[in-house]
Image (cartoon, rainbow over all chains, first blue to last red):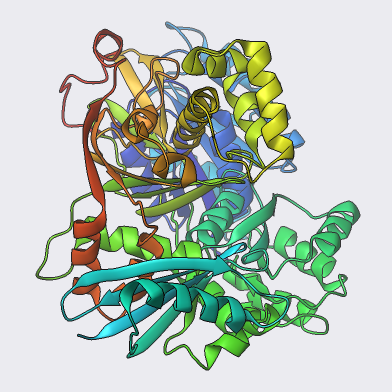
Length: 138
Length: 488
């Protein structure tokens, strides 16, 4: 099996670094080639890294409540940049306050994200989803 | 006494420098016109004759040369993403002393192919994709380049998975050289192998093509591109040799007639707290060339970048008169200032050339308001802790106001987010010895270092006049923490 390449990072003016490091470790241990862009990552940085490294998925984290603003238009930019079909995930505290996650997920899917994950999701859950979406082990 | 001759075949002048490596001293310098179209040795012999008129007959034990004659080393590069592999390719070429005429990103088009054909590069650098990453772009571009009949050599330094395929595509029409990837992993810069390859090709092919081979019988060592020799000289001066210390991290600016070159030898990492570094890592030895900033051929670029009002303000000459004078100089590129008014104009132009070129070379910072308070995001090199600036170029040598002009390299309130030095000693290279000492350093590093320390003239310390409240207010200066450390 070819090693799948994924891009991870924390979007916007968000400096929460601990979860990002845990994710890096978990995905690497699970056998992914992980490119970790760290904190305060712009949409363009995610997309540029994905182009150069021919990545299979971009996993966006947001912990500070501004995720909806930061993620808006990201799918369109991917389309513009020639990677229209790349898998896009988002997770963390991706909205302000406590909201019904079904509605939140719908909003993110409408923005073009393939999956959205609520606060407190285990990395194992993301890994299973990636394996399914990237058809790993089939 | 053991005299060594150092030669710089420039596009206009052949400059010669004689040193005594035993006494570690400069014997003299001289220049004559470069005679590339007849026999390059004519100009060289004439320069040596002029030199020996000053020094007396010298029996040179060794001769070393560098060259930027016949247009220098013209390179074109193509990469994938502009900020990533295309930028890495540009850094690699400039650092190797090339004149970069164009940098392409993404897939080359037919129009690009026409442009490349017309530009006749000496070397083409083909990159794109991290190792195991994107290969479509570099393969496509190899195909486009293969269609250009002009048989310039091509260096392949992109995704290693695609390298051999690129070579096969190119081989019918071009000599291809495979190198390590300039960006093997995301945000990892690896430009030294490519720079070595550029230098090897320069030796192997370009020297013959540029009519320099006739001189090579006389020359003991290999010929370097001049900017590469300058870079080596500056690096030696900064770092020193094993047993003789250098003068520390430094910035050098050469304001020419057509271009302004800026060199830094420093790591450039964030110096302030709460700062996150973003983008491609910066090379420790970095060279940038501003092709639109120069005192004569590119005089209008200076005005475009800084505005005629600023030139008028600095020179104390009304704006319309400034425009008139600049128009005159653009058409008379060999003129030097002959009166107070023209000197003041050149002062303003040289000041803004340095201001613009250093501003573009230096990194910059943007503010980010996070939940943890104000943070900074840094792109490029932080030069604020550099305390030595070397300047050279006609407009800085032939003036009494060298230090005032050089002070324009410092932090400036007009561009508050640019990470320029804040306080520095100014050194001037009056006899253009740095390239020569870079050549000498390959064989006599200690002598080269000592001669530079002796010959570069120290003009005192300058401090940014804009320093103070602005920087303090922005929170750039306080020791806000350990830097780059975010443990939330």
